[in-house]
Each structure stands twice: as C-alpha cells, then as structure tokens.
Image (cartoon, rainbow, N blue to C red; front, top):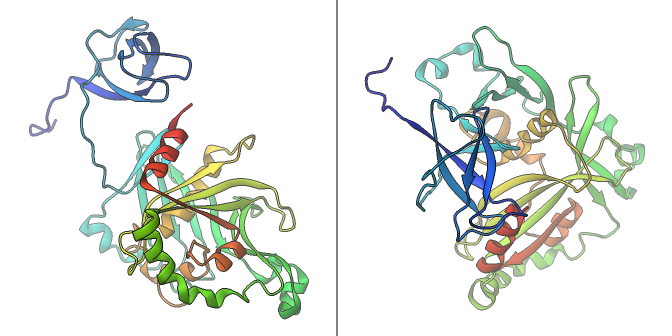
Length: 346
C-alpha cells in the first residue's frame, strides 16, 4: 500500500440524460458492474450530462443513490487521449528506462492505457519509414501477456492501384489509393483514396488569394472555425461506398498562421457497423497526424519520405481537398458549439 496515496470513498461517474427522460425522473445506471438508480436533476434536458458519486465498495444492485449528484464544476482537459466507443485511453509517459532501451530504437512505439486494456502503436522499422507499416495492437492487463495485433496502417503500393494509374499516370482519371488499413490476415479492410479528374488543378493558382479570403473570414464573417469530413472506404478501390468519416475541427487563431486543430474523430456512417478492433485499427490514422506522437515517431513520420507526406489531411485549398475526398464547411463559434452539442445528443 502507498502511504502517500489519497484515500477515496467514491468513484465519479458521468451519465447522460436519455432521450426519453426528463428532469426529476429516476433512471437506472451501472458502474463497475453494479446497477443503481439515480434521480436526474430537475434542470437537465435529454442529451445533457451530469456526474454522480458511486461508493467504491459498490452499491447494492437496484439501490437508489441519495444525494449523489455532484454540483456543477469546471473541467479543462489538456492531456492527449483516445476514445474508442465508451472507453478512454491516456497516452503513457515513457520512463528513462524506456527511452534508453536500445531494442526499441529501430521499432519505436507509443502506448495508450485504458481501464481494461491498452492500445499499442508500433512502427516496424524506422530505418525504412515508408516501406514498413505501423502496427496497432490491443494489450490486456496481466504480466507476461502479449499484445493482440489488430492490423496495420500502410501506404499504398503500385499493385494496389489500377493498371492505368501505374503505366499511364498522365492520362489516368479515377480513384487512387493513398493509404490502407490491413487486417491480421493480410487483406485490406479500409482505405483512404483520392479521385483524379481531368484538369482538376487548373484553378489551384487561386490559392495565392487564400490570405485575403482568410482575412475576410476572420474580420468580416466571423467564421473562424472549419469542419472537414474525410471519407474512409472499404476494401475495393473502385467501390465508392463510404464506411466512416474522419471529422476534423480547426480553429483560426490569426489569418497569418496555420489553423489550430482542436478535435479529430472517426464516425461510422449510419447503418455501418464497425467492430471495436477495427476502430482501434482506424485510430492509428488520427493518432499519427495529431502531433502527440512526434517525439516517438520522429524518423518514420517527419523526415523526408516519412508517413506524413503520404497521409492525406485537410490543407484548406479547395481543389486539393476535393481531390482527396475531403469536404469542408466554415462555421462561427456558435454554429460550431451547436454542431458539437447536437452530435452528443441521442
């Protein structure tokens, strides 16, 4: 036992008001495998959150918790983390021993720890940044257990493209694979791709006017936020079925400097079911481009020939983003807040 560890009698659990409920109603909830009842505060509406204190020894099943609702508070989260469904994973800080471990110099890794499992992202060989993939695995708690590989993120190869794109690239129009998510069996599960059209970059020279457009947005229209949606497709290059979207939220701090990225998330399309393992596999993409893994993956990510040059992300130039199947929408701060609140609703 740690004598300096603060004793805690309660666990704080965040609950969301169901769409069918209203303030004052008593609902059933669960925490740590125990079921309990709690009364929704009178002023809350469906979709809003409230926090309750649950005894650490666990309430009796079905028992109502009295006076357990926590008063409103202020929370300012700054730590890098990943949400996979309802599970939250925090990025682990490496110790001096980990940084000095020469066995990981060629195969750097990043670990995100959760309550029941951990997500480990490993690059197979930083000496060959674009030839070797990033491997995603899930690690169950317990000594001696090996991570369970769920798949890899790889750049597209020549054999992944249509024949015309390889042998006659100047005359090719159609889809072009940019990155692929590969399962443990070696088959492609999902992909990011662009769409090449004839003369699609003829108006790209208008990008020189981008600073003027940004000044107008910042000073006159008050649309400092931009929402991008990037399509994730299935395993067939010529199939236009979208399985999920990568959604970015960027904020303009000043017209003269790059926008600040405040959120990245992957949202399955309605009617498309994606397993937890596939979500962990897809999470490798936003993890790499977020900037929180720069120190661990400096060689395979940033140096010339690294992964960041191959992974398509929003750039703000309409012609380039459109070619990469990325759609954008400018929002005011009120519209951005309304959009994010609506996405949290049932």
